[in-house]
Length: 94
Image (cartoon, rainbow, N blue to C red; front, side, top):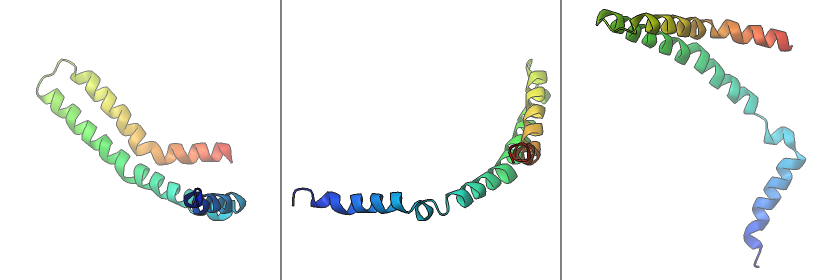
C-alpha cells in the first residue's frame, strides 16, 4: 500500500519505453508546424518591425541610425530568407 501511488505512473512509463512509436507519434509533425509558423509568420513580421523602428530612428536624427538600418536590413534578409536557408540546410543534410 505504501507504493500504490507509484504503480500507475511506473506502468505508463514502462509502456512508453516498450512502445516508442506510440510515445513519439506526433512530435515531428508538431515541431514542423511550429517551425513553419515561426518561419512563415513571426520572422518576417519581426523584420518589418525592425525596419520601421530603424527608419524612425533615422527620421528623428539618432546618431546610431546608420547602424540601426544596417542591422535591420540584415535582420530582414534573415527573416525573409529563412525558408530558403532552412531548405538549403535540409538539402545538405539529406
